[in-house]
Length: 243
Image (cartoon, rainbow, N blue to C red):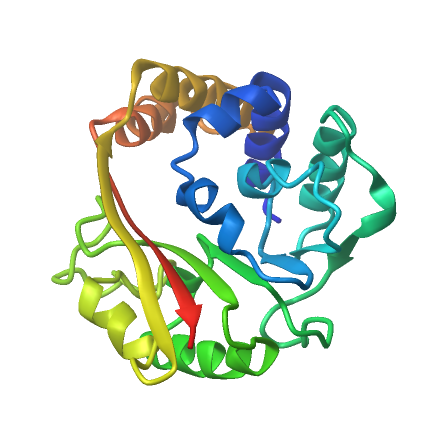
């Protein structure tokens, strides 16, 4: 993890309580809890997962997977503040997905939140094809990805897909999840502008980056202006059920 992102996630951990991030999170899984079949839950690329925090009192075995140990440490600390949390049915694994295989299991719920847009569409097809081997009839797969309306998407820019490798539309999701194998039970496109609270947090983060990383004075104003301009955050959220 780069130094600026280490600063970001440390500030995020210290500024936002569990209750805050769970209330802010658009979480349709709450509507489908009764449909989650027997079996463990896995969140791949979990970060400080607001989704997993809501399963803190679950009796299911839960795998929290991330390629950054710092994020796993933050999540485990957050869980210690959750009511009814028992660590005995949790596993925190530092794992570089998809190069390293996830634990061999048949999962009741697989969470892929804010991870697939870091791969090409073809690679995403391969990932979901592989993930299917870890599911059975009734298994749910939660997807959250940046849509093609996301502020950073500019197809005319030759460097458009250097960081986020793909921006999704609904047809992309339908092509990844083959209809004969999956039923889409939920779909939403979330569009929003950054709130004042969002901008304040980003401003505080930039101040920390500038202070600790010795950003040249002549670059500070441009840096803050770029990050704090109005941005259209746009994501697709979907839940698929294995047939």
